[in-house]
Length: 231
Image (cartoon, rainbow, N blue to C red; front, side, top):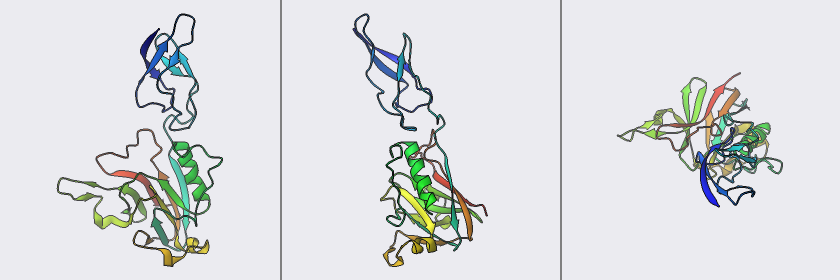
């Protein structure tokens, strides 16, 4: 009986933070056992089936999202007033009984799409400072600003249209009039909720946190979503 460290061929899955796993080789004729990396894929949520050879450990089924998931939705803002905050529940919410785990990129993408279907541009983030920043006449980013050595933010404060508290670890945006029509009470809004004047139209939100290689802890500016008016 011995323990070996073998390279892991994840077949597109994200199941371990390491590129190697430990394998227990029992006595001759007995099946080897994986001692680490027994996690479901952080992207698709599938539990891996391993094939153990003499030189490597390989996940047999490929991940359907080897590059992660970029989630794109559209939001109609006919009023020209965009409500920006972290949490618009219970006016907008989703039922995740049929979704993948919210701890996976797929589960988060499904939540984003479910919220978009009822009129809310929602995006999971981390517990960080967020803002909606203008980058052009009809283009924006939702981002965590970085600071230089003199504590000057990038993007600059002058470009910030709304600061977003992340008690929910998310951003939520909706047409202000649509929110009211669904039962939203303007009297409940507080310092963490902002109504931003934008050009009336349809906006595309491209959410990035499910992408492979997305670094929420990057030293520079972290862009969670690109937003652009398309009609």
